[in-house]
Structure formats: C-alpha cells, structure tokens
Image (cartoon, rainbow, N blue to C red):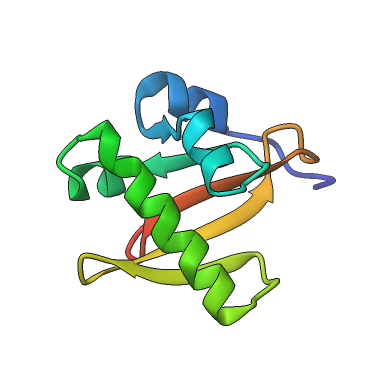
Length: 108
C-alpha cells in the first residue's frame, strides 16, 4: 500500500521454520490428489495429538468435503472428530504460488 510503512511481517516460510505451521508430507498431498503445498496449524497438529500419521486423515476429510460439496471456492469448511476446521487456498509469500493452509475454525 502506498504511503504505509511496514512495521512487521511474518511470512509463511518463517512460520514453518518456527513450527507454527507444519508441512503436510508431499506423499500425503499427492495421495489425495492435491497439487499445491499444504500446511496445518499447531492447533490442528494438537487435535491429532502430534501424530504425523494422522495428518492423512485430515487431508482425506478435506478431500471428501470438496467432493461432496463440489465447491470451487478458496475456503472449504469441514469436520474432523467433531471439530470444525477449514482449509484456505491462498498465495504463498511470493504473492503468486497457491498454497493451502488447514486450520481450526477459531484460527486465521
């Protein structure tokens, strides 16, 4: 924005390095047919008790909701173990490359 001074910026890359966002293994993404890099928040990671093997269950729950709703929106709401989550497709730090972030409904 013109005329604005940037005071602070926290990138997706920094959040991954800090452990605030956890990368979904590429094999899990590809198994479900997703082509864009995916991450989950620490809140979602806690929901699965830090069990990396369960990340695939979250990705499949998202995939099933996309198939069921036939939605082409950038945000999809879905549930896993009676917890409300959502996935948002948005630009990466470069402002161009699409990425997907899976979050609890209370996160943004």
